[in-house]
Length: 297
Image (cartoon, rainbow, N blue to C red; front, side, top):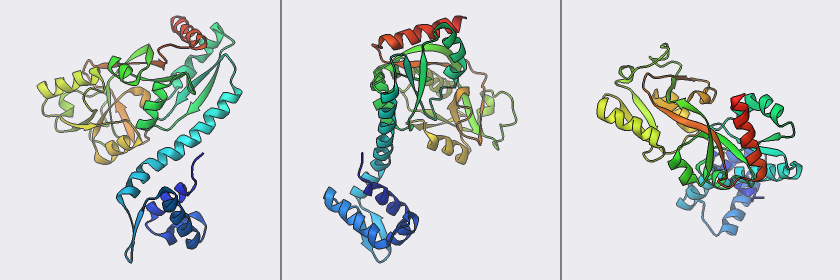
């Protein structure tokens, strides 16, 4: 599905030398060099600057390095999705799941769903949380993945070209390190956050988050805001490592073992639900209707 010399390229870039990469890959340095030379020749790119001090990525190398991991993971996920497609029947709902879009809510609701409609089956399709995957999957729901669970608003739905069935309103909480000075509290107030840095998604990602941002800027300038562009594990690591606070919801409780998600006394919440294609198949329509019935039972 992809050029496996990319694996060698990533290892060389991470190790900083051919010999260390050879040890990590359990092959000879000569074999590593041959693979890198072949990759550079095939791509017509110079990926490394070679000197007596070692190896350094060129600008082209940096660009390829940033994309290579996504290419590899996407190729692996494509094979998983293809295998799933071979096994699916008309009543199978393919649920996309990732670190930030856990499907536990549906798993817990499934006994009620199955009782109402015994023929419905589900299949979990894992994917890596990257900006590229988010755009690709949400814009093409119904092809390889039917539904994904997550927080949303109309801005996000329009941007990602999908629709949603709202399941709940999730209070906006904050995640913080288990070693943070506020971790012993049961609930936080605005004043507890004074002097702290709160990580929020960039403006225009969600109107609900923007309302909170504006409230803080206007009424609580003692809270510093730090912007970021995408929720992934690196953001949670940054929160824990930098001793920051991070906007979160309780459904992300198990994303990072060293973070605790705590409620705040403000009145801000964000919709949470099932994201699906704006023109769902009959199978997905039936599933969504069944979920609505299960919620009422």
